[in-house]
Amino acid sequence: MNKRIFCRSAEGKIKSIASKSVAHRLLICAAFADAPTRIRCDETNKDIEATAACLSALGAKIERNESYYTVTPVKPCDVIKGASLPCGESGSTLRFLLPVAAALGADCSFELEGRLPDRPLSPLREELEAHGIAISGKNPLQIRGKLVGNSFSIDGNVSSQFISGLLFALTLLDTDGTLKVNGKLGSAPYVDITCDALSLFGAPVSKFENTYKTEAHTLLCSPCSIEVEGDWSNAAFPLALGAIGKEVEVLGLSNKSSQGDKAIVDLLRRFGADIIYNDEKNSYVAKRSDLHGIEIDASQIPDLVPILATVASVAKGRTIIYGASRLRLKESDRLESVSEFLNSLGADVTQTDDGLIINGVEQLSGAKIDSFNDHRIAMSAAVASAVCEGEIILSRAEAVEKSYPSFWQDMLGVGIISEDIYF
Image (cartoon, rainbow, N blue to C red; front, top):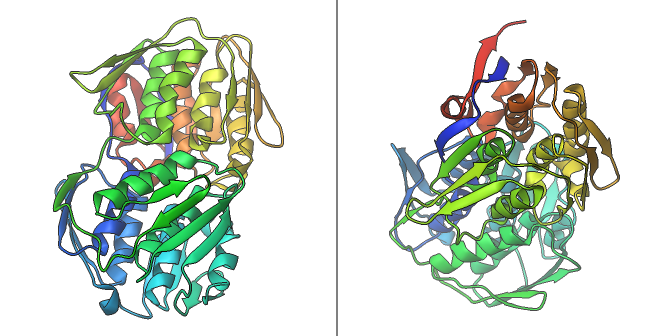
């Protein structure tokens, strides 16, 4: 799908969608609980649907009706063996469920799409193999065996998803478990979200220094009914639009969330934007002010880099983003794709080994650009249109369906016009 994009006003209101990160985790916990769970999740997307499909393949019954998932769990002893799990392009689905399936002895295969077969599984793979799991193939990726032992260790600088996956697996063992994280843990707030979900299902995780501990549970304990909170990762795009445009209000965001991408508020304020929180409405209003360059350590918030770079492209002075080397292993090489799409629009962006150096310009220009089949690049391009002199022609605009299928429709409410074109 190709779209012609331009901005009419860069102001208005928009409701945040349900958090993909939280939804993954609640579905997994619900699938192995002691009773059915009703999960309110107003929006879904390809990644969430992949996790639901994989859990269904393992034997849980997951039904979607309007804004709700109803999850009827499967007992570990009744898990379907030899199943094929359709992960799509969802790294979270694969990295969470690979250890889970290993703990269950599911002897299953994982069907992968897009760049997912090439995204790293080490050192998770080696740790599972050291605990009795045989892993073979690439696509499908096949596992055989059942996890042995209850003490695990893994480096923390590749993906926090490995740690989350192992924590889910540890709660399914019939003994207490420990997980030691070696070195600095990147994207640590995502592990906090996992711990929040497990705690909600009666399996609190304790932590001392760099070691997580779980207790043996026969089954997780369903809270019966729960709601997925608003998604800070995707709310970053309309908030950034307000910061470089005129004024945008995003509704349905919890200021008490464990989501690391809540940092977008402080980062936009550091750029000089005016961000106001309304406690009664659970909303944030972003208003443009004089923006200036800043330095950003992106090690804990890598998914924000594309939209932060977009803001930086029109902020006076220099912005330096570092600690983001893992972005080369996402849906695209995001350091490469961010710099290419912004430079195509007239920005001044230079790559480094682990980040970007951005010298702000007064205004961007229109151009034909590619999304690189990356949802965060496509959404960043839409925001960039607010400061473009001409229109943007974006190819593969359907990439947004991975995390935010209603993005183009929702953005109409804040002045971003997108029209399908053919060439």
